[in-house]
Length: 363
Image 1 (spheres, rainbow, N blue to C red):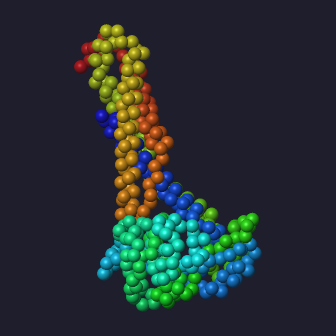
Image 2: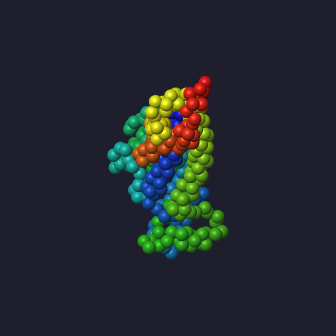
Image 3: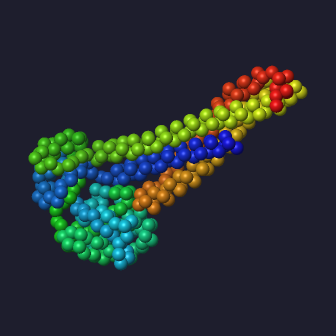
């Protein structure tokens, strides 16, 4: 029972961390795969004339400017802290979703029509957290240029983890009217077919070297994000592996204690005809079966922990969908038996070589 508990805790912990890491990786890739541009430039409220300067650079096909502001979005009279500081983007409804292939969970055509009429599009993360439906009213509390609240009717929902799911869209006309901001905060850039985005990026950096705009390729941003997440989860995985190693020593210790307490029993079995090979077979069968049981309990524990972590992340405004990896669960199950057998090797061989007479006298 102690071995099963140790295996269950260790395997469950490793499965949980690996699945969270795996799920975050899948979701990050999905976000970047939905992007249909090559380069992004942060422009800090620049005018539309900047687009013409960008288009003059060799290798650039087209551009799209977007605007954004951070504000409180709420459904009650007063905003709650958990629903604050949402990113509000003012977008060109005819072109934006050519640059971001978002998954609409409602009728896209109708949602964009209602958006142009003064509505707001939210993410499914916000929808689920606050039980919103099409037609519900939400309020946005702006602080610029002066504090004010504006009510919008929900016109649709998109399923995305961009900005951790804390994102809302307004049409650019509605955005400019209510925020009094007309400049672009970022510009998405698509390169000509056959052009290397890195080469085009170098040309842009050279042209705008005195303007200090931050710009990067989509691929580089994807790699940096993936590496940052991998480093975080590498540390967590390392802690779980250390805990598993400590658990293996605990399992080994349990087998040693078990063999010592059963010496007299083993000797009596040997005295009535049990051979060394039969004893080893019996001990390894015990170890393997208890290891598989520990592995099974660990898999069930890991499954429950993954679901629980998913719920915790949602409550923390990090709506990461959990993706289950079947081979990972199977490997964890088999590993329980293998770990148990390996920990049993030395105690089992030592027990098979015991002196029967001395062992029978053992108290």
